[in-house]
Length: 150
View: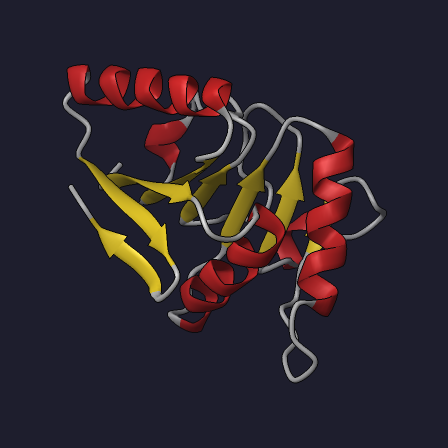
């Protein structure tokens, strides 16, 4: 694992911010595994990835929809471990587990800045990663975009 980057959502919800992040990651040629915990959240993100911008297309699929996961540049899943699409980048939402963090080159951890439980969980994970000597960085969402704060 090279680094875990924490993304503190403040001015936009996940369904609006994540597609742009995924677009940047996939433009660089990386495959992405998005790991969440609820079917509802993954369905919302699936819809958002199809419709976030009229002039773009971000190829993706939800695991278990009868598609070949290995063929997906972006795969949304609730699986707690594994890398079915051979992704280099793991995106964690909803404080999804990451026992297999070392299997990825990079991890993006997105959390809701308006939710106290979400903030607490992110702080806890930050401390755990730092205690494990895993490099971490922190980006705060602003009206103008992401600003690296740590």
